[in-house]
Length: 114
Image: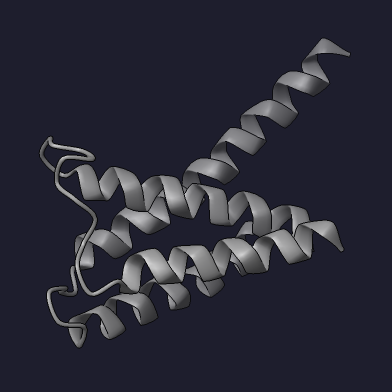
């Protein structure tokens, strides 16, 4: 139950961050494509909490989080000061895949050490 509540909290926080009328301050990260790193990181965390809460396989988690990412971008298109960007969705999905890749590597290394 704890992980499901945490997952809901993470979804709410991520939604709030992505739907703010003004994007976060450029002084937070002032390098090219810093927002893509943020997208990657937030969706990596979403994938972790989703996995801990529901244990979905990649084939189920990926489309669910893809729909969420696309929905956020569509809504951002209508938020003043924001815009939709397909590269944000790609960064989101790379974050999800990054978690599942890290998980697979961890599981494989854990088996090898036994």
